[in-house]
Amino acid sequence: MSSETIIEFRDVWKKYSKQQVLNNSLREELVAFITGKRRRDDLSEGEFWALRDISFAVGNGECIGLHGPNGSGKSTILKLISRVTYPTRGNITVSGRVAPLIELGAGMHLDLTGMENIYMNGTILGLSIRELKYKVDEIIEFSDLKDFINVPVKKYSSGMYLRLAFSIAVHSPAEIFLFDEVLAVGDEDFQGQCLSKIRALLNKGKTMIVVSHDMEKLGQICTRLLGVTVGVMSAD
Amino acid sequence: MLMIRRLYDYKDLLLVFIWRELLIRYKQTLIGVLWAVLQPLSLMGLFTFIFGIVLNTAHKDYPYVLFFYAGVLPWTFFSGAANFAVTSLSGNFNLITKIYFPREIIPLSGVAINLIDYVVGFIVYLLLMAFYRIPLTWNFLWIVPLICLLVLYTTSVSLLLAALNVYYRDVKMASAFLMLFLFFATPVIYSIDTVDNRWKLLLFLNPLTFIVESMRRVTIEGRGVVPWQMALETAGVLLLYVLVYRVFTRIERAFADVI
Image 1 (cartoon, chains in turn purple, brown):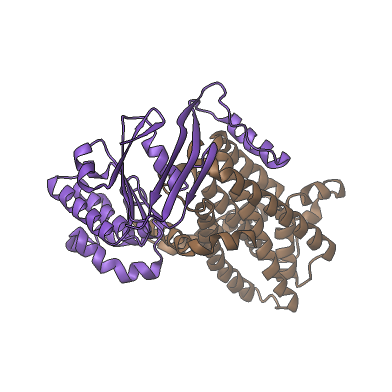
Image 2: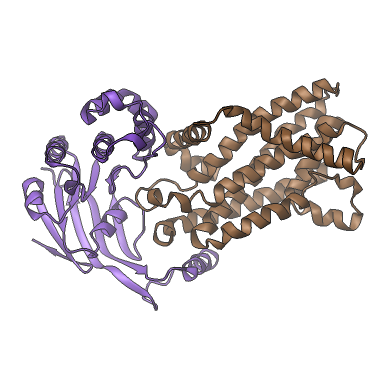
């Protein structure tokens, strides 16, 4: 395994607000925009730290398992890696394309057919239309939905839906894959399929971050485990 | 320009978004893309009936049908795109909170599908002009920069409304009212020539006033645009666009946290 660093967190802090209407946040952004000053990075009322002083590095080709209780900040870490959100303090460097499988089927539209959703969801995950045209047969093959591919997704069973979503996601050409609790969905068969696909991706040298409660499953595939408790990280 | 460089890597996603909206829009509809023409045509029919027949007010010395259609067409484009934009980001929160892509892609796809409708509607406009035997002049070519200006202004307003609605859902409520207000502030059902000079300047603060009036001038009347107006309005719209886009890319980073 190469030790080249592909993801690095340096002293990362992330605050969130509990309030419903976030008028402060917009005002802060605008003030920062006009005056050119940095945004406030301390806590004010109604805010809390979701992550406190997180630092870690992931090497190319590693598979990291993140575990910890609900609300400890695991998903926040994934969102920071995929640039959905940004840190309040600290720095993050990610070198490579990221395929976030944070929620399977986030980009699906129920009125569209399976085939149309492959293009929809695929481009959202960063594939180009050309790559998709080339991979579409492979995706359908893996999802095992050949007979249903021209049926609107709203008529799918939840298992079929998940199979399609997973199949699209793992065919992304990204270097970094983020899995959030995807090991916990679907039946035994499907989980087994997921695991073997994850192993296949690892063999191709992809980097992976897997979030799960299931320490046993994490142990089966991951090279290293990291625990997160109330926003603080502990390495095993 | 600013936006094009940022969007280059994501051009396929923008295309797919446009294609998706078109698919969704015309799925399970009977007449499909004919809606693009039916909407401005029926508005034109309504205005012609009310102002030409019921109230019998004369604006110009050319057919009412052309007069209203020339105004309704850009208005339908603007309001269609802006209405789409308002809820475009907040309605797609499941995407915004999970996957990164330049957020302006969603409101922009709304501008794009309305532009497609506009082009279809414009073909009907050309047919109407031929039907009423309006002579084509070189000044007709002014329509190209005018459409660019319209698209740029519509894009700015769409981005602004979409971003603000992420923070305050009040924007959605206010925008319904704002659209009605803007409709009357734009010379769709009247001509700026009938307006007292005192109010003209105020009305020209709305770029749509200049755009709609000039579109009638260059197509039906065969006259050129007023150069100083064109220069001022273009500068104003460009400034608005740059400002809105800067703010948008700045606050975009926080969308997932506040949506």
